[in-house]
Length: 289
Image 1 (cartoon, rainbow, N blue to C red):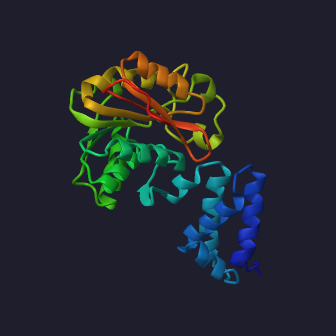
Image 2: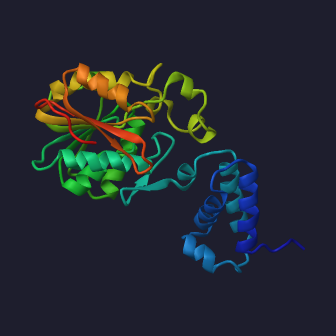
Image 3: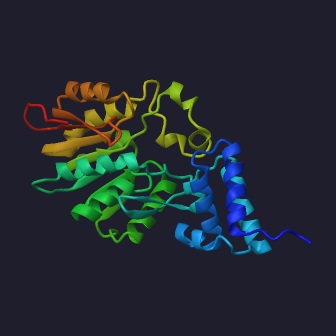
């Protein structure tokens, strides 16, 4: 007679198995995967510890756990992630939104004060930044990306979060931005160096889109392009605000100043890492980070 597995037994086994496979946070991942298989949240999983699993349920759990053991990102397996307290659909066509990027949204919202205006989001991916800004500030956003597949996901996310009328999506290369009059140009561009691309953890290297990761030999190619084009797409006094990789803030700030942008500043994330660089088309001066 086949063994009958309870939810708790499966949870313990899965946690150990994922840990042996080198997965970070194996217990949390096990809870979420089992919850997805049983259509329960984490509290529901806790309350069902003694529940015996049917064979079909076990098969579903095993299939999900196998994918995670092969280092497929949990967010792609679940098909969604929370960002800015909003739900976002994610697939391998888009970079997974990270909590660190919420600092970029915070700085974007500051740039829209005290006067609001149109926003241009370059390299929108899942649409996370554009949608968060539209949702919070009720501003119109043009969100562009070179990937048609990414834009399809972003459009779904805009609809699901009730901002489809505020966010317009367009397929465009970073180097082909049209002239405009935007209050804010915001971007979380590719910034991984060529050397770093060879050292990425399997979840990133094997599953997330390289197009959204690789920023050239020194990781700064996109920032050079953004700095050159910012004066052409921003109104006078408009802001260019970007996310940067660890250790890149000073170099990006130098690029912005060399392009004639003013009031350059840096903002750290909540781990104390310089995560955002901003600059303005307005007057000289330094803004506090």
